[in-house]
Length: 140
Image (cartoon, rainbow, N blue to C red; front, side, top):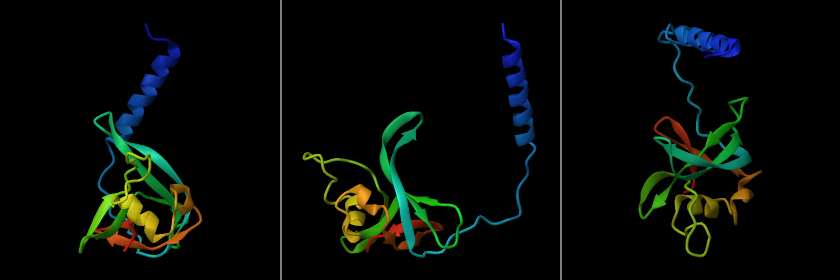
């Protein structure tokens, strides 16, 4: 049997759901930031989930963009792989020596911005590029 608090919570959740299903299509385009240098103010390594199962971890750089008041978060990098530009997530993996794999996208970004470890990104000013309409770290 539900308590009065649980009943009230269920009613509130139902009201919120009813409100949400009454929202229509907006008229404003999604804001696209231009590719400008950003300043990294912090970072985190976050779990990447797929269907409630952890499939890996990515490095996310929390950064200040000159055209946005709030911080932005970037976890993708564009870099040269052979003679082609490619984009990839900054996946956090370790090699047999418990180091970032030498040929990974994360390693490419770290080399470009002279970072010996992930924490060295903090405080750096780094270039960005567009991949479609999304900002990515420019590491080429």
